[in-house]
Image (cartoon, rainbow, N blue to C red; front, side, top):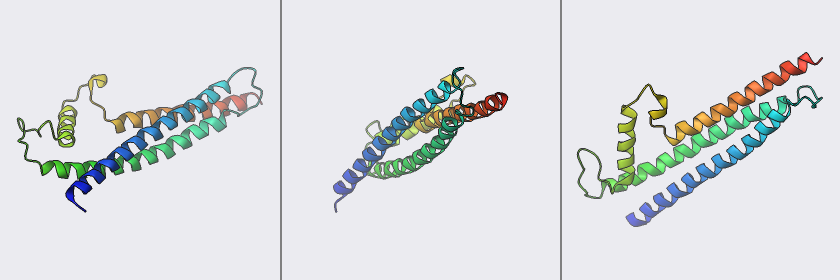
Length: 162
C-alpha cells in the first residue's frame, strides 16, 4: 500500500463518517419531531386516555440518549480520520501564514481557525462560535427536556383526571 492509497483511504473514511453523522442526525430530527407532535397531540382536551403522553415523552428521552451516544461514536471516528489527514497535510511543505497553517492545509487551518474563535468568547452567547457537536448536543438536550417535561405533565394531568 502506498502513501497515496493511505491518503485516499483516510479521505474516503472521513467522507463516509461525516455523511453518516449527518444522515443519522437528520433521521433523529425526523423521529423526534414526530414524537414531539404525538406528545403535543396527547394533551388535546378530547383525548380521554390518561397518561398517553408518557410513551412519546419517554421515547423522546430514550432516543435522544441513544442518538447522542451514536453521535459521540461518529465524532470519534471523524476525529480519527481528521488526525490522519492532518498527518498527511504536515508532509506538504507549504509555509505557514502569520503563525497559522497554510490555507491549502484545510484540516489544520480549520482547527486553527476554530481555536481562534473559541478564544474570543462573548457574554452575548449568540455571537460565540459553536461546533457541530455543540449544536447537536443542544438539539439532543432540547428534545430530552421536551420529552421529560411532556412525560411529567402527562403523569400530572393523568393523576388529576382520576
